[in-house]
Length: 464
Image 1 (tube, rainbow, N blue to C red):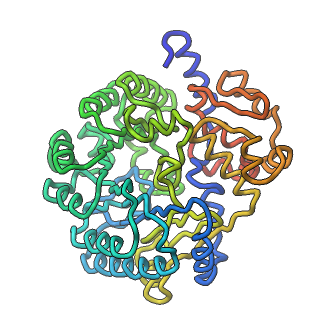
Image 2 (image 1 turned 135 degrees about the vertical axis):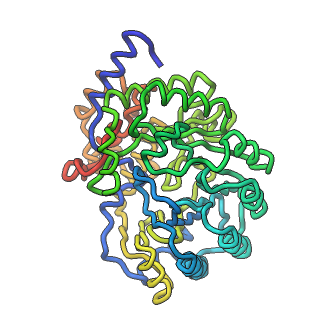
């Protein structure tokens, strides 16, 4: 990262490109999904997915329950009130696993299992164990499968960590968010049960292959100075991966976020200072920047994949092209991310349980992609993950001409003039290369390939 005048110029550039836009965890984004779907349609696409690429299977399990709801959270969550509801939820999930897995080829290998939420580690371990044992009986797990859970430090213990390891988990992502207890209190997040340093020591002692720390910048009471203290404390722990999420303030989507406004939120300029100073600290400590907000040790497979231009990204986050799979989702609000389509389950816990009990499936929204949309999805993914786009290679992959590809995304070189002038990307001989600084505004560059964006761009959070 630059210093002095060059650094000030970068700040001005990033503020210039601080515009609303999708995060592109999918293309088209989830707001394009419609309710024009059916169980039979979903089943037919599941069967067809067995012959589509990628051949690998990624499994996602959504646990919406939280003992305490954080005001900043943009996820689909439910306050954990009755154990009977949790029991009914997991019973429905087991049924859903049976019904979806019955349509999937057993020749395919599972390369990713991810548990998110909500707070998955806040539920009794017996529920997690029952699901994991079922998976092992149904599917074939690849030797290098990544099996991960997002965990809140407030509800974890050494015993729970050891139990997760005993059923096959090999990575834990700790949602630390901030080490400052005053910040956690303001955002209504429960403090860690015991020191993060001891939690990570217990994770490593249990034999986990990877530990992640997740942080958020842009929250009330945070300053550049306080945020750097959090970064420095995290770096001392040498997590394999470190994630620094930019807080997305979208109270029109999540009304609880309005509660944060009375404390005051950092300005875009203050957030930018946090972003840049945090980036410098982390990369200087020997971490490779991955995509927009992830960092990995140089020995980590994500860092290796980035340098080999083999990164990929799905709803579960960044991964490698080797380990990624089509995503099959279980639980409320989960999205099946398949080659030909997306299908999303009911967001309400009660509606999810009802639909599973009545039909065996819970999908209420879906979207089937055209060949043109698959091509755009591929373009955006390559740009967002690897900072490259070779129209000639992509044309061969889709059996189209370069001209046809450019027509699909409404490509015009003039659209990239300001990115090129600001040295954020280069374009020559049908090849686009994003610079290091350009990767910090890669969402903006990707947006240029989205022909549907202009109609509703203001519904999204800003890119910085």
